[in-house]
Length: 231
Length: 383
Image (cartoon, rainbow over all chains, first blue to last red; front, side, top):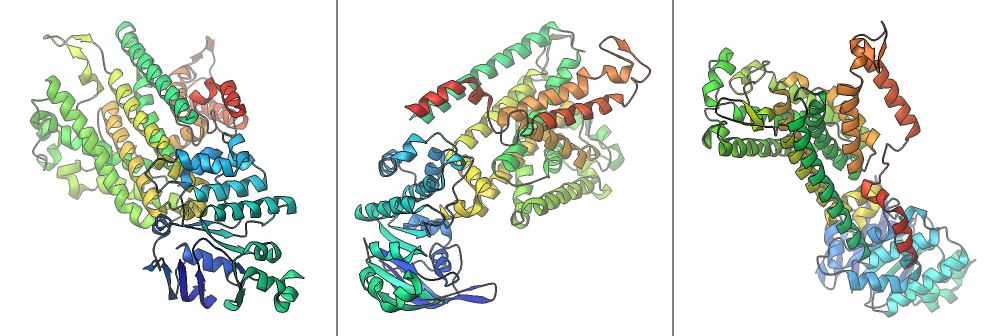
């Protein structure tokens, strides 16, 4: 579905991504794992159009989307849940969700109900300012907001960051549920254990290069991965 | 949806309140003595509140710190004045430059300022064109400066306003702008009073007119803010990264907000020219921008009703209620201290006290319609 060829991205003179190629099959959960500074976030940001690639191409369902502006990419069906949640703190939960559907001109009420079904907690809090939610609820809101654009692919940048283990489990259950309902997921995580457990396909990224790939289960049992990321 | 119901109720409340205010203005105007300071407050308040709301749109709702307001007002005021000086008066107004380069006058095209159609069509068209010219210049300078953030954007827009002011005073442009002299003889609010054949005023509408224009413009801005565009503006204010990731085109929406805000500042400038009976560049200084910024801050950044409320309080204090402090007698107290300038001392202290006790401004980022039903809101959450 999403195909990346030889992608290179530079950041202020430093090449953060040094030519990676990967594929995200439709309706699967794909995860990229790697240490800090491996280039995971940069890869996602480049796919989302927030960073411009120096080299390489990105194709969505055969269509070249390299270097398009972020709003064009969202309208093509790729939405990013940014690292650190980034909800709009002074706006209510409903308003946050509506902004997720900003580029759509059709009726969004069904999707609002869909998101509320996925996250009943958000429905209870729909009139609260997003800044007053707990970390886990904010993460739910960030995911719900991204789903409001009806994406084909949802990309998540460290959804477990700074959350309690029980909350993290809830988030991962939701990711599985979203995927089950037909949305392709591209996930990057430092919590490799959790990510590999739910991933259909996994890639290991080290200092801007892909070093390993396989199914989530394969990598979970891989000695190298065990040593470096699972501890 | 609950929210839509709520905003509909807010809109109805706003409409009812506006009609009430307009009726009240007409009644007051035709019963009280026309020399009452109240009408100065109403007229100037209408003009300033429109500009304050337009400034709030860009500074409070979109999070762009722009200080170009006076510049855009100047563009609106001059466009209005240049297009409405009656053809018969051009030679006297532009006597230093041997007449005006603009050979026509909008009200004259529709039958002259003395006929209702000439007055209404001509003046309205000139006001709208004033807004358009301001919007066009906003677009022009927005291209380079909207890439800047916070203080840098403020400095760039402030600089723009100063440059515009200098250009409009330039003698070489005299046949159009009348150089450093003011453009007079333009239709003012008083032209809207209905007179009989002998010229005696039979029905006063001079405060009604600016109030009406202000209410229409503010209603348009409120509609914009409650639309999906308004949500996008607020998203940009709250978090640019997330807004961009959600598919909001930052450059486009910032420009949109900036241009629309400048349009209404331009309209406000045209109204200010009508209020002041003339257009002259030296009035539109950065002090004027700061005055409006002060009003916006006191009213609450991100609150439309706060801006309107604080404008009228501010104008009433500076033009009316504290007058006595300059004249020697205030609230019946006579003191030698009460002489020219003392009013501003007291006024500054009042502002400092207000800012100390209302850190978020009078209204914070709430609207009056939110305050009317605070209990209802919690009930809806519980459902």
